[in-house]
Image (cartoon, rainbow, N blue to C red; front, side, top):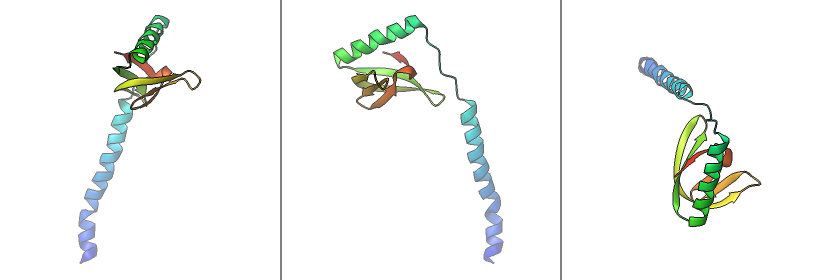
Length: 102
């Protein structure tokens, strides 16, 4: 009797596996390429980053990560020029991935 019941639900297990595969494919399809910033825009970002570090206020940072644009509201604690990243109150972001600071 148990084998009969088990066979009855196998179709639903296959659908849940298909749903996961479909979700992964949609996620991959929605990924974008890293935006290319002009030299002028990079200089503006440098000034904004310096101002954020000096003021100690929270700033909204938009950055590229894994095919997506992410946002983070945090204070800039340190700019590490050797590792090319900024240390924030709520994590770290590579300098090359920063798109906007407001």
